[in-house]
Image 1 (cartoon, rainbow, N blue to C red):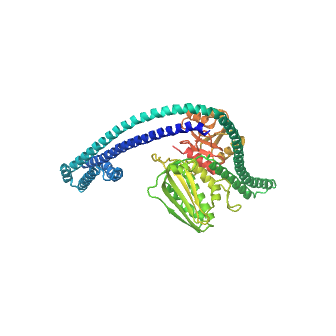
Image 2 (tube, one colour):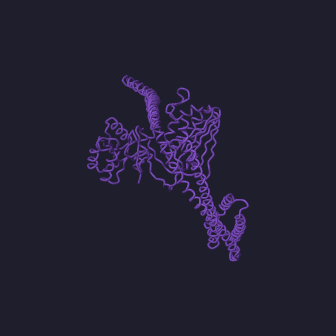
Image 3 (tube, one colour):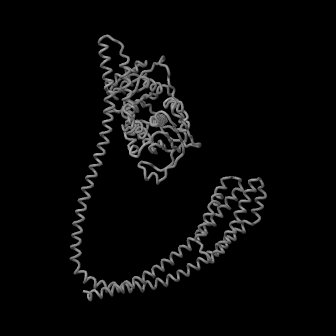
Length: 612
């Protein structure tokens, strides 16, 4: 067996010797090419230095000729960049090299040139333009630049000669490589013939090993599939658990509110049947429960990023300052409030009322965490979230943001609580002290506005919650003036109500008549167009959006086309529709979300009717 392997061993040894020799030759060639590249890069660095000196000179001359400060920008950039460029050149210059004296000449000349540029600019800034120009005409700067160019030309000649020598050496190496490659090819051919004969005997062994490997791979693939199915089932269970928590929270809160409403209405009915009129407290209880149910729906829409937003260009500093009285009333005397407002704060484009709600939510949570005694700090700042931060945070886009931070001195949160803090109906507060929707509402609004929210907290160290809203780059939007009537004494307008739900239509019609309006009501868009044609004195169209055959938006477009100047107010209970896109109301749209109070209805009608 050993004798049979001896030719193969000797052949491979010879082949290894040839290949090793060829590898050494290739390494030498690679080193020569690397040296040539370094020489070229070195010369490029010198050219960059000369370019910076020329940029500085051009900026100085432009400034001396025109007196315009923008000409100093290229000068200042060049002056700032020259030390770094010199440092890179020094790092690439070998010690005791023939290039070192030339580099020293360049540094001296460049120092003289910079001194001349600086002196002329200083003279010009002092008002002595004539002396500055005389100094330029004196030729000292030109002589320095000529010396820089001369030294660089010398370095280029040295570099060119070095490259030529290396090219000659490379040609010799390539000749040796061709010889070595031919020898290696012959050796490979001879060894290949011998190896083929030997490999045939071992082919069966290899085939058997491959079959065994394939079998194990199949087993491994089956195990991976089993694990993936198990992990998928776990993820589905976690999703169902989250949905169950959300559904349970909604059912719990709505059942409580419905219980109050049903109980109050039943009691009121019984008293009325007995001829008793003291039912005001029951009506108040039912109204309060209904309002809380509407607020819960609004919070759920905010978490789902489906609430209708009316974004404006917002000065956050002014908004925070304007909330001072509201925050003091909401937090009480035991909480000290401090604001740290950044100078030169950028504008953002968001719904100002929702920003106020978010700050108020965070402040109330902070008050509860501090047990009504402590310090609350509200801070604003310009912030930049870079690519590295965005890569580690889902749904975050790198860029410039306006940051609002709310910091408390409360009990803080553990990491597991932070992980669940934005989940709906999750709360650490005692029963009846919170719904668990405050932070989820803030989260939904910020995400719907294209922003980001982050919690920083440790147990016993307080909590900071930072809201990042995208910076606004466009022009400021002019404030829209909308007259709002404060009295219904002179109400004379006729309103056309379009609502396909008979009960909602009746309730809305009664509310408008209570406000003093003349009301015509229909249940479809086709009937509405017929009424408009028959009644030309209709001043406002109040229409539901989600209706069969013809939705509210199509009806409004057709109605305004037929009767220019007709005012329109849209209403709906779900905002993903024809006048709200990506959570933002269309421009110049009057919108009233269901459910609404009679006061909200009156204010919205007057707002729409009084717009000129």
